[in-house]
Image (tube, rainbow, N blue to C red):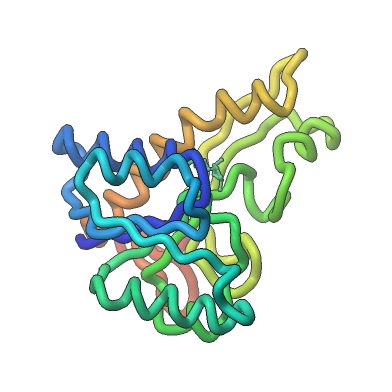
Length: 203
Ligand code: GRF
């Protein structure tokens, strides 16, 4: 499976994919890491791993549609089978996404459909939730709204803060993302017209 990863920042989920590939746990090729932020630390992980990088700063494009068209044209040129959004902090244009339906996933730090968008840890705490978690979902034009492939859960403990939750969850995110990419590589998971199938059964 040829995989392109889109990031905006730290890139710890990207690092988890790099490590899993290196250890042989994950049978994928990481063919491209793209970022909208030239300063994204994750770009350094890609360079260190010898993965080609692409930086497109949105400031140079007139609007979202034009930027996304260029970004996805450049990604398409690398011919990925799968695009992974791993901390890519931009909403994507529906027209640019359309050709990639079922071949683009995102990791989001909440138990979707709860808490799409930002500040998920703070919102879970404020709601008094007993459980928090992260989800990997297929990307549609609706922000964090596409069909969920899998979730991972953690218990919220007394004394938890948004930071402590984020830290604890991040370790689980790394496992979840690698697992989901592996399932897609093995063709165990698939998006069809009526939903997500796993081992041939509708989730
Ligand atoms: C993760 O919490 C991910 O769920 C969210 O953004 C964060 C990215 O972290 N979408 P990293 O850049 O992978 O370290």
